[in-house]
Length: 614
Image (cartoon, rainbow, N blue to C red; front, top):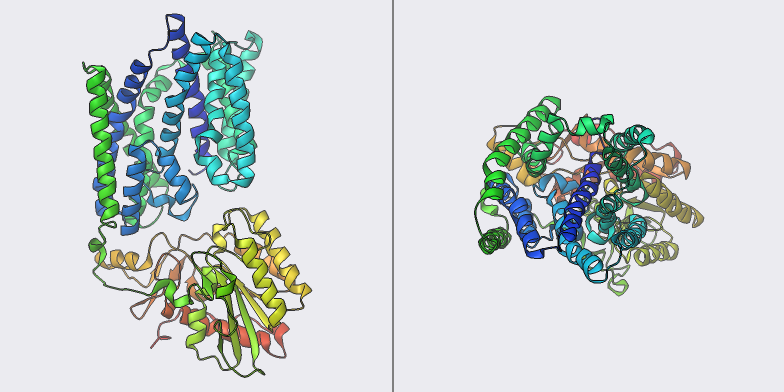
């Protein structure tokens, strides 16, 4: 959100408010005889499911028209997770919140709804056992659980960031913080209530303005918006202060009523806008999307939420209707997954590519797991067989391996190429968070092969844009370059390769259907890692090769030449794309291996011009 890069902290504030309101209601029930668990869950069904099912129906209808096959299949899986109130588990297992395909997931936002429902599946019964049966004060039980959850959250932020973001054990403390505020019922002294509420609002606004995708979150950082929300709630309980008057005024109360439907509609609208126009919304479009989400929220509240809440149905009928609706959602999800996302919708071009089969899988390019015994120097060395020929070794992940077919196709005559690559493992030491668990072992293996073979040049490449923590990336890359320098081996760092919002062949199909040129397109890559890579390479006296300069002009990058796709998915090069880049890369390698290596400069931008593949 422009001006509010940390807008995702709205979920944390919502969790605090939810914990406060639900605990207040449950404590009121305890005072009048106990918690009626059955009635509580029926109320939750009435509150949550009707509007959710309507949005799901709209998403499935729009998704069938607009989503790419892989993303429609992904939607099917997320529907099944949502039906089981476990979509947070699906998104955790599949990808991070700031993953490149996040904007192709119209139900991504429902992870927070799943967290909340998982919490309320357990919390009311636990509160009843503690208060009504054990007759303990709930404050200390809630405080203990909150502290344990927060401690786990802090650890997860460093060790398991995706789990820390999506899973209940690491998020429960935020709901429990609101519960603590409801349990204590202690307001700030009147003279401190005004400043307290102002401080609380300032903490929330500061978090929304200053946090970003690079913030280690939730962890310690989440304390700021959570504490802000608690301060506002505690100050708001004091009568007569300005925050109480503001929160009780007509506009906030009305928006509060619409907030659930607004939450449900806002994200699908953004996703489908981007899919239809193949670009993020600009300022004017964001205004229309906001107005559209608000309009749908009003309609949803008036014609779905309110009738469902006040319908004269028994708890048994509500439960039966809810189970039927969720079973239908699960069935729809299974159908979309089973159909593989209805790929026949996008088969106008009929392009097929061998994909990772180009990269010598499971021998020189490990895909499903690293097995050292599968690699051999003989099988993974290409080009000149003469022992006098200089050796170049390429080390990295699949975004290093995808240059190998192009270099092979040039019928190498000046050097031998040795390949040591593993999907999902950048040539980084130590391996950053998010890489595979056996990346450390693979990278040690790669370094051992480099020390043994003593190549004349090492190429290192990776999908650099998937590393969001620039400080961590710089530190790990610096360590790798230091290790190679210790071995006395020159290094050529391969820059970021463009990645796109969907499979490039599908993007080209859509562009053609709309009558638009299909040879250039704006990538999803932000190339944020490029300055870090350049700086670190220069600091360690390594050479640099800009892939971006060979494929892009301004904000547009070439995705096809003479009708041939340069990519077979959202970022991996086809044989044609690999050869296109390799033409410039081989010149850069030859220069780096020559007597005047220090004077080498990147090649011209001719690589992006038509005709190279004629």
